[in-house]
Length: 65
Image (cartoon, rainbow, N blue to C red; front, top):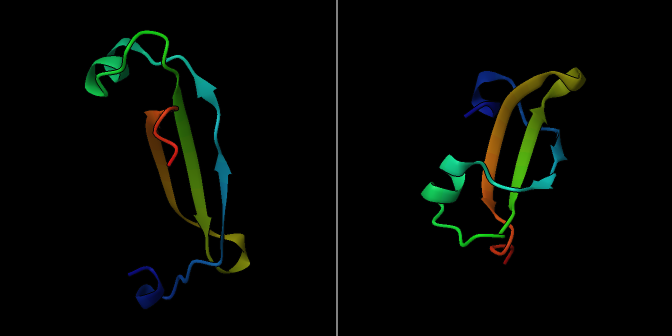
């Protein structure tokens, strides 16, 4: 879709720290106590390093398959 608007995806960067979940995350993800979460923050860039998309994904650290 972005490419059709003249902004093709050229590259991206990820930040992926692991941390304890906040209460709401633990409840929504139905995590047993002691299971950390991974927070992936991705920025997608188009031509001339222009950011065109950002996303945050949080999931259990045990679901890395």
